[in-house]
Amino acid sequence: MSISPPMFHIVYVSSTVNILDYDQQIDLLNISLKNNALRNVTGCLIYAHGNYIQVLEGKESDVEFTFSKILKDKRHHQITVIERANIKSRDFESWYMGFRYYEAQELLFVDGHSIIPSIIEIAKEGIALKLLLGALENHEQLIKK
Image (tube, rainbow, N blue to C red; front, side, top):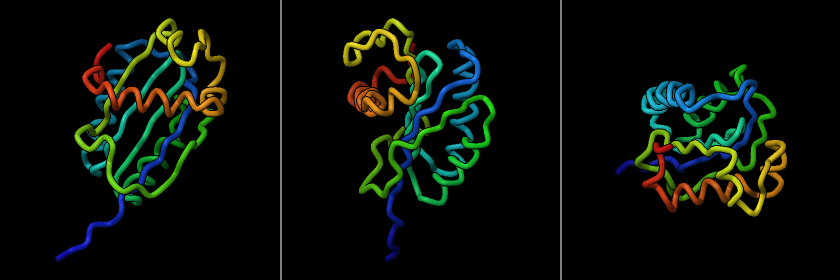
């Protein structure tokens, strides 16, 4: 009987260098889906008005490898890790990359914020985790506009 390695996740936020439209995000998502499937990394990506919120989960070495590629990606900056930890199980086990694209006006309903000026504020206010939890609870909205 083999023992499975513990699961691990990284939750981070970052800002895009250039604002991406929905179609550009889908192109990026398709590349991520393929790469994550190769390493059995699952998770969720949320794009909100120039900001990313992402959770990556899987075997620690696979998650760290994937995250190291993200750190080198010149399309975003201000990468802020919210959490890097062992977890008991995956939250997004059936999604190599769940995705949600929020228009700026949709963020009116997140803690009463109408404009989120920076990704650092998102991290400090705990909004990133609330958006991820909302995506998990409402998984039928993932991969929808």
